[in-house]
Image 1 (tube, rainbow, N blue to C red):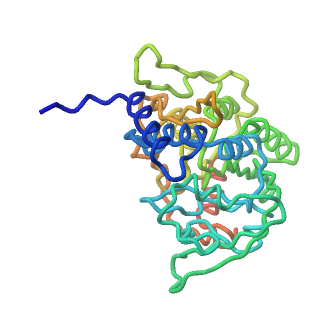
Image 2: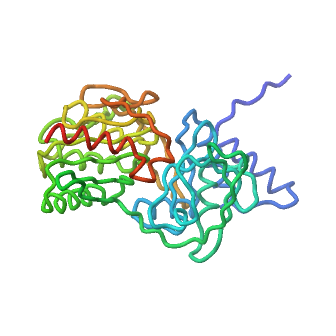
Length: 357
């Protein structure tokens, strides 16, 4: 009896391609098969954040980090295999239609979502400006499913929302760590300082993260010296220590708002500010995504995303699957966050800040 040959990825791909080209009724193109090989190899990893981007998906990803895309204005993530809304950007079609954080996505354009990965959910929601998408969601507290038909538009991702509260409290909300995050926070703080702010509440609730370098730059606005984050890589020689730049813009008291959807870069900032005692954290425990992903463009188009390291806070804490626990825990129904009158976490953050002024 002849034993089975030990497979290699290259030999397996070549053998399967030859069989397809010889026998399949409708063989696919080499481009399509190459994409399938890449997707299959990525999916073989024990890595929940690994992902293959085809050309169109990669374009979507680049648009999001650049600060604009065409869609409805939501950020989504995956919880126990189910796609859900993390945040709804203000002034967008999604907000006007009535979508809310924590809405679970059940179907898109009448197609159930069980067969898709998160990347496919994003692809189906986004599209050309002026076209419509129908989304069916399950909302906590609602007995029946809710359906929304929303017209896609160009979404300018707002990095920050700012407001002067009670004459001395500067409120700054950061929605994502894209390439303008530190620049926009600095501008907001400068503006609020000129208007009389003596301390700041920085709101990172529902912020899913983004660019690692931007989290370091944001920390540099508040911490004069020291380690921002340590990247603990697969090979020790690839470990990297990121330090703050020393270009602080304020030494005013800080309170940081976080919740269960504050992830990745948000947790880098929260963990470091807590370690240094630079800010008091208010809210609930963060998501627990203490890993670093890297995007590698592919020569035939598209890209792959892989987890390449874990990060540690300045005191060496690992946040992966653990999260950051606030100094002051304040639980709240997510729906109450949309209205400042019922936002008890924000109210408590302002109270804590006033104690420091």
